[in-house]
Image (cartoon, rainbow over all chains, first blue to last red):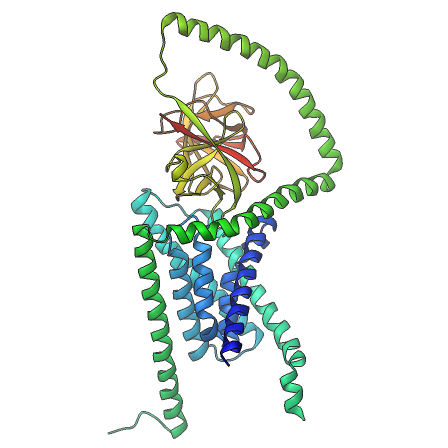
Length: 179
Length: 285
């Protein structure tokens, strides 16, 4: 039992490391607007939609802290934004958006990214207003945020559709249960 | 007393959700508290060894992906517009030939200037030391136009130092310094503001601002001053820590509206900001 748990933890840490490497390649290699895809945020939203957030939250928390090491803003901003958006989205998914129709997943994606970015902007605003004396959000920045919301929400919906189409068919547990 | 639940199921569902919410709230509070502690430890510098170790593990992946990005970008440009690529190549060759003549003239002038300075016993007030740095990669989230470089506080890098490429093309300023790495805000970032001067007859001053996609704008230029397309824009030296004369870019369009108190110039940066591999941080002493 212990060995199984250790293996599970190692496999999840490996999975998070792979996610981080994918994020590096996305931000460095893909053209606009595909480089706006945020793998960590996407993983968080997917974990909430598939109701496995409780198991993955510690790993996502670690992954977010790792990302902070290569980010412009001071340490903690991204993770704080991620926790707040997770909290909001989880509450909505449990109490309001209880249906799992793909349009609901898309809306959940929009809300998740929007709340994440909104909290991030609020934190950045206060930090930059104090440390640098100014904070500018112009039309280009707003367009970027819009692209980020659309790209991530679409990616989440695609993942959800793909998972609902294939996961059940590929999982042997369901085959055994049928007989 | 009136019961607020119409049936037992609703009562169960309500309490079930409440129970779940309590458990969930506790989980978020625990992680929030851990985050606050980590931020506090980070401020004290206790996390530096862990951060350095993790950066050293992942830096090669960043460098590799950044290198691939530059190669892919160049290959894409070549296949996208082959004719345009060859025209640009021939233009470059012509420019190299003409710049060779110019550089020989500059060399002679430099020599003459040095001799005159020596004769007048002129002493430089400030000494500029370039800190050569390798570009590790771009900012991990594409919300800011920023680069990660492999030199930090231990190499003498400090906040607000200018970062150049080549002989003196400004690409941005240092905004974040860690012990072993720094982050450069590029001139095309929406938060970037640099005091600039146009090399025209009026020596027009203004503020070079990013946030306009690939191009950069110089704003707050008085409307009566004469600007031409092709004029070079350099740093004005009015900003603390940034020396005068670093090339920012060249004017490609001028916006002079009658209802506005100032005119602005759209400029193309002096170098391609997506293909940077080696940069220098300028430390003034």
